[in-house]
Length: 76
Image 1 (spheres, rainbow, N blue to C red):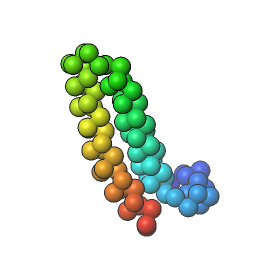
Image 2: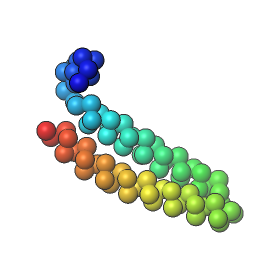
Image 3: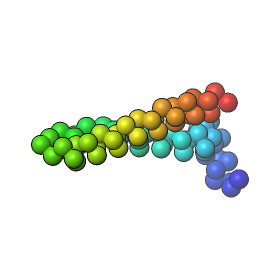
Image 4: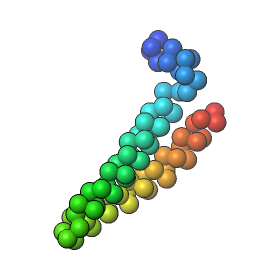
């Protein structure tokens, strides 16, 4: 592990893998929120609306998985 990573972990008290997982989780949550707006914009275009809904559902599944992984790593 590089010196910079060790220093970062030491300073924050959070491992880099846990931090990375939290960052991905945050990005997924932001995506879900943005897709809500996009779904409103897509009203009247059923095909596009369904596409956004499907993407949002996959993002929610990813969030569920990541929440558990992050929680485990923060307890370590």
